[in-house]
Image 1 (cartoon, rainbow, N blue to C red):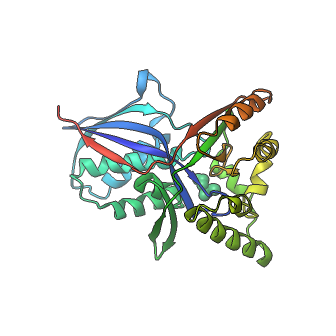
Image 2 (image 1 turned 45 degrees about the vertical axis):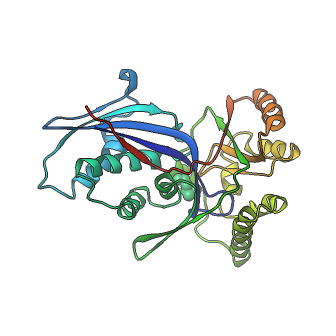
Length: 300
Ligand code: HSE
């Protein structure tokens, strides 16, 4: 029996659309047990948020098992902790896909290496920016080349805190992708290429004054902010509170502001601001997760 722990992730980080992702210190955990015949999935406390057909953990587990039709193996998967909010831009679907693939790999006696799991996960998710940091931890730049994922980890400053502002409403990634244009002008492309390059170097060299201008983006954020009630004003408030910078987390609707050290003043003032909005927003402070997905064997 094993326990699998997968972190939340924030993708894009401003201009790095479908490319940059960071694992966060917030986790989902499942326990996987080999069984002779039955195949079952148990939610915590008897809850059942998704029917089996929409359960991404089961689907991705089955996806890997289907590559080995000769092996007939049963399993019991127990969802233990579900801390990553669903459809909020914090990588809940990536976490589910990665959990299911790790579960299947355990059932198949760990026949796949991490790099192969990264490729399967990217195929299932459609883009690599959440699944790669969810597996590896830390901040990762990813792209695909000949149907394989190329990735490179970047050192993220250890004194930056993620102020994660999560609303009570959901935003589906498919809707948030559907509002994006099919093509961009050369000027827009140059804008994002320059900003993302500046962002990586500013983070690596801890050149915090350049992070705010580096987070500017014309590929996705302007279109998506319109889908996030009060998103623009929260970004403005964050700026007035002197955060290092702010961005939409993944496809939204969660927003993230980076602050240095404890960000105590930011947290108090922003929480007060959020409490006056028409939707319910909560603010959680988290750090980067460097571990990525871990599995621990539990002896029965
Ligand atoms: N890069 C993806 C997007 C992340 O912005 O659509 C969300 O899954």
